[in-house]
Image (cartoon, rainbow, N blue to C red; front, side, top):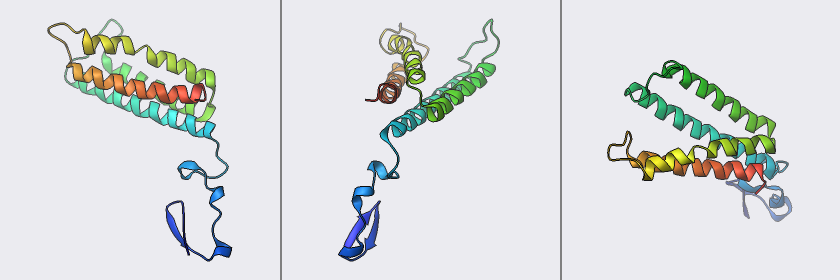
Length: 154
């Protein structure tokens, strides 16, 4: 008789068949709970969004589209952004605090007005194409969804 246990075929007879009641969803160990899984998914979703934002900012900096401001050149802000993203990632992954995730959800949601403006309300000579902003809206919305799942236990 053949049984499938976590994607592997196991040959056994009925007396030694694996008990599939002990297999958690998504191939996780039986003792893991969905609360931890949701925070882990939210942390990694946030990390991927941060990597995408850092890569876009770096590419824009190299193309000369990030200006020098009264606060200095753009490159230190790229480093600060990476450090903050790393701290948020570690905070979501290790701390797993609902209020921390909610604050990050609100702060991350504050990106949407600028993205909607760039996607739909840009003037005749936009700095970046509307597809850039539309893609960012989708990415931010997916990240907000993952954060909300963890923060409000949805």
